[in-house]
Amino acid sequence: MSIRRTVVPLATSAVLALTLAACGGTDDPDRAGASGDRTSSGSSPSAPVSTSTDAGSDPGDGTDPGEGGGDAATAVYFVTPGPLGDRLVREFQPGDADLASAVALLSGTPQDPDYSNPATGWVQGASQEGDEIVATVSGAAPGGDDAPLAVQQVVYTLQAAVGDTLPVRFVDADGGDVTVAGESNPVAAAPQLDTLLLVNVTDPAEGTTVSGSFTATGRASSFEANVPWELRSDGEVVDSGFVTHEGDWTTGLGPWEVTVDVSALAPGTYTFVARTDDPSGGEGPGPSEDTKTITVG
Image: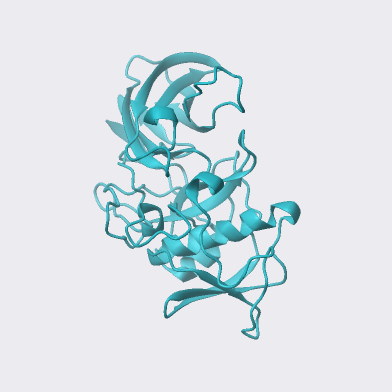
C-alpha cells in the first residue's frame, strides 16, 4: 500500500475526539483522543496521520506518530447534517494533544467541506482543574437553535484532549460560571447515539492520495453492526462491499476497518462512502453516511 500526503500549514486549526455515553468513564475510546480505529499509512493534505492503535480501555494522549514517525494527530469534532438532524463528526488534524491545541483548533476550519464549525472563536482558553475541565468562553453559546450541539462540540473536543470524560465547566473571563444553552454547569457529554453522526470515516482523510490499496477506517453504530461502503467516480459506483463494526450498535459507535483495492482503477478523483445499514428499505429517515474525496495516483 502506498499513500502520499502533503501537509500544509494551518492558521488556526480545530481539534475534536469521539465519546461514549454522558456518564462514560475512562474506558471510553472516544474520550481517549486516540482514534479507536486502525490506520492507513497516510493523511490528507493538512490532515494528520490517524492513530495506528485501538484506544481500547486505556485513554491515550491524542497523538500517534503513525508509520515512520509522522505528524501528531489531534481529534476535533465538527458539525454535519444527517437524516436525524445535525450531528457531530470527528476529524483528525495536526497538533499536540493538549488543551491549548484543542482551543486553537476549535477556531479552525474543517478539512472536509461537508463539515462546519459553529464553535469557532467562542472558546478562549481551557485548563484541567481537579476533576473538571474549565473552558473560558466569550458570551453565549453560538449556533442559535443549534447551541446545545455547539456546546457538545466543545465538550467532546476538550475531553478528547485530556483523554478522559471529565465534565466541562464554562466560565467567563472573570472566572464566573456561564449558563450555556440551558445546561447546568459543569456540562457532561451527551450520549453518542443522540449526538454523533452514526457513521464516521477516519481514514482516508479528505484529499488523501492512494495507490495500490488503502485501508479505510472509522466508527459506526449501524443495524446489526453492518457498514456498507462504496467507491464512486463521477457518481458511478466502481467498487462496493460491507464491513462489520465492533461493539454493541445499540449503545454506541464501534470501530470498523476495510482494505480497498484500487490497483485496477484509472488515476483520478474518487469518493469513498461509508453508511449505516437501512433495514427499513427507505421507509425511515434513511441511512447516515460520511464521504471522503481521494485521489488514485
